[in-house]
Image 1 (tube, rainbow, N blue to C red):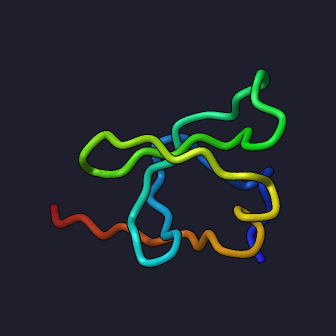
Image 2: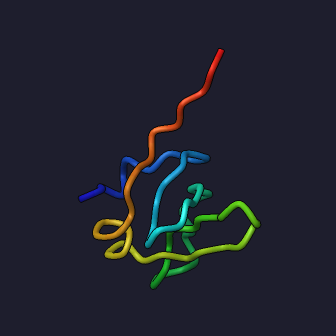
Length: 64
């Protein structure tokens, strides 16, 4: 289970088979305060329960 306090901006996460980047925490959205974007710039607004149950952090590898 992923804690919402460990989310890092611009890190890659997986949600229901889609790779999303965490954008920011929205203070004005009570029901869906966590904002993610996919590679096509589509916006996903997720609730705290969704983040804790269904979002997994992906480890990105880069070559030097």
